[in-house]
Image 1 (cartoon, rainbow, N blue to C red):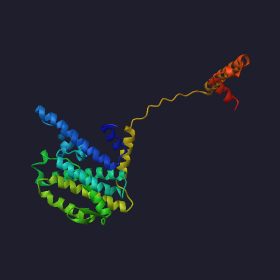
Image 2: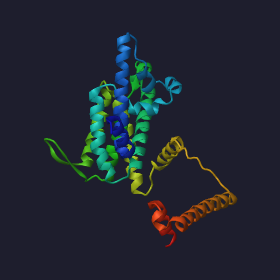
Image 3: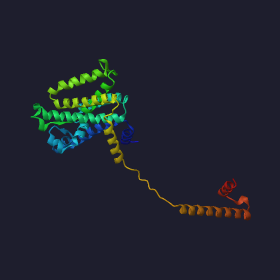
Image 4: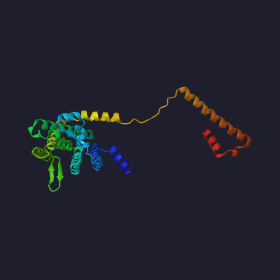
Length: 290
């Protein structure tokens, strides 16, 4: 099996977490490879603008798909590295309490919530007026943070071990993360921190509602499954229908041919004796005598 076949098999048989990681890494590699050709040709690279989410409402209306595509889009190696590590570590914890369908649902809803927080803040607060038209959002951070906060709220006393720190409960990880994002709004990455807060809000709502018996990710998960089932190629199986009379004719034809062959064997025995039969003819007589 080739490397490509192994990757396909791993993606097909892997968990929702594995698939999310593969998609993020695959998009990153594809974007960076295509960018090389644009760089060598001396042209500007347009795909980032078509896949990242704009802060300007008019631009977003022209590219509505970006509220989904932005959460799978990375250009910086360190950006995707930290997001993938967070997704892997906390995604595994998430799957110990929930299933893959909920992981995918929280990831997508968290990303959407992060995009909406970013959009609203940039269009409501005067601090962003000068950069509104040029601002764009990309990265899986909001979607990943939704998973992190969902775990922190649902199982606050779940303990993880951090290098150089030791055991830390998830509720403290969630609290410190949210405080850092609030403080970070006044930094150069204001849009990213606002999106993080949107993802965190979604993760909190998911966990609180799930404790009450309501899964807010269920509707989106069912929609994704329905679309995936619709897009899945159907096996090409040719079915031939035959009526009863056709089957009877074939059966009688085979029986008549077998009987003729047996008559020939018996006739050969009467003329030349049993020893004149070959191995196949003896086996036919043996089966007939059972």
